[in-house]
Length: 66
Image: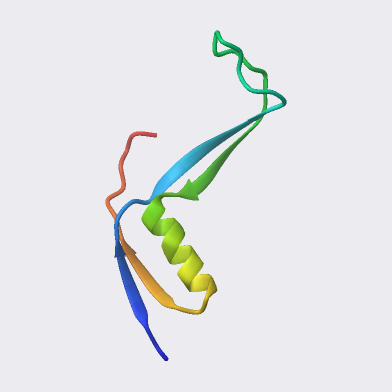
């Protein structure tokens, strides 16, 4: 079967911070690694579908807030 899925939704860049323990009550924690990882619910679903062999496309508005 040759399906094509068009996603209309979010695409985002997630900021993932790694630390050895959860922040204290004052919100303080030592961060030893920071990564920018593509994400967003619609984009994530389309990536999963693509890995299953489904042809996908995405329509999303990109912001300039980074």
